[in-house]
Amino acid sequence: MGLTPRKNGIAPLQFTPGQLRDTVGLSVETFRHWKRVLSPFSDRPGRASRFSTGDLLAASVLRRLTDRCGVRVGHLAEISKEIVSLCNSASWASLEDKVLIVDLMNGACRLAYPRDIGAADVAVLCRLQPLMSELRDALLRSQPSADQRHLYFLPTQVGRTAQARRGPR
Image (cartoon, rainbow, N blue to C red; front, side, top):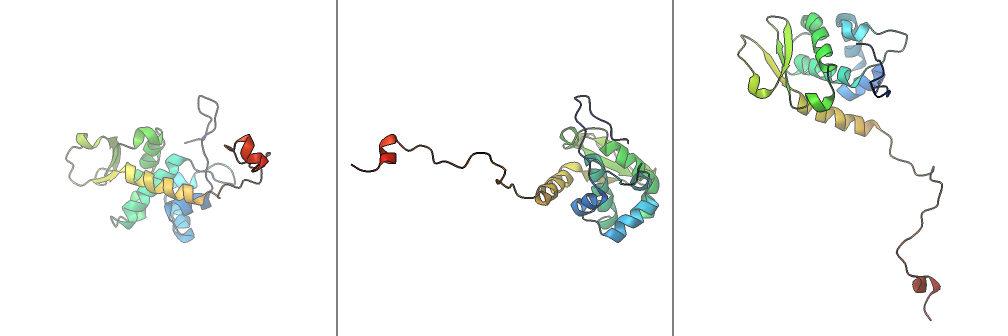
């Protein structure tokens, strides 16, 4: 779960706890509780925790399980490790067309294509594409609007002919 540079030498995006909370839609109190109960959110090295895009996706999955499915966060302590690991296992582009199957009875989860879903006694299916769309929108809204004060050249009108610049004769 360490944040190491990728093969091309570019470090992955990292988010602060506040950015994770805002993007996923967690209150400060809820996140504090998650940090006490869910080890993937408390086992971060250093003083200032940093989270990856996969961590944001995993937090979004966990939030859906608690808010929409009514699963108590305490029941997700063990499986949260696997959810975070799977959400960090590949890029969003390769995860977007998959479904995360959370088998609460057996304490396991796996990624699958929607066509490969087998029958389980009790399982929660979580399509990743809608979560990623919500996260992308939240991340785009959180970015400040582009400021053009840093431009080196003043804007210039283009497309006028030399005669139009000289004026009428």
